[in-house]
Length: 442
Image (cartoon, rainbow, N blue to C red):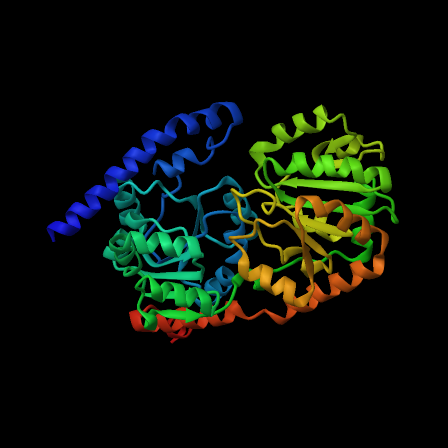
């Protein structure tokens, strides 16, 4: 008992130390870039949790944009299966929060996850009293998890993943990882490799279920041919003009990619580039770079002032990436040419039959890389190879078509994770004696 108290005290002290160290950086982004201005009061527990306990609550936590997209189909099915439960979606990033409000309008509450300090989380958990807490992928916060469990909630991990680096880290801090993962009642993981890694760090095998990747069940809205034509016209792109979309880019990827494009424009001068930075607070930074490079460019929000001669269209609005992929001939997925990120969802362009190109830094998405390579649905390149590969694809439409169709066939064959995950959660609900649709009707 004393060991437990000491452990939680040390954890709380480490949070305060991290907060002190992070405060200068947070204040810089708060005042200079406007970041955290919307989320800070939620994260301090002052806003967003005015919640009635009249109906039971399901709490889904999806840390950022990718995780939010991953849980859309599952959240919808849970709402249909348990219509008398309220649904709360929490995020950490502002992009994730915006996506949750846009894609999950049927949820009763959209909030930011509070900082994991005991005094904040204790107050929030008592106010919300969740019956089921679902965490997507790998955003683990000890106080949030243990206090929701203490209040009687079932705790579930969905779309679980564990990188080789994280596995090694959890092994080093075995006492912490044992406490953390013992809190879960159920862990739904993406594949058997991740299952083995969870077992390797001490998770009970009977709690683990391989249910697949939820991101493959996300809904991908399709434009008609007329819709594609209309959007290209709106953006000042002629019907035959080649288009390259650079999605989810980070610093310093834009610098490398734009300088590469300046060389490519010598070979293919009518190429139009659509640039979609991952984080909206970086729009001004990207604009400054485009100006420095003396390019012809325009913001999407100013598109009515276009001349049609712009080389780059900067998308400075949320929720447009998939539409941009549909307008494109080729897609580059960012986060893969910088070591600090480790890649994003390279399957997204595949849903639109577009060949996908990505860099060598994909350590966070190794499963997707294997799938893409095996299906010959995309090309992984170094910075030095990128320009040549783009030239080949832009010149030869038959190669683009073949790779794009391989990708479409791949993603269509991989669906079904939502159904498997939902069934596993429903079985758990029955153990906890939570009412489903049928019981409530009876």
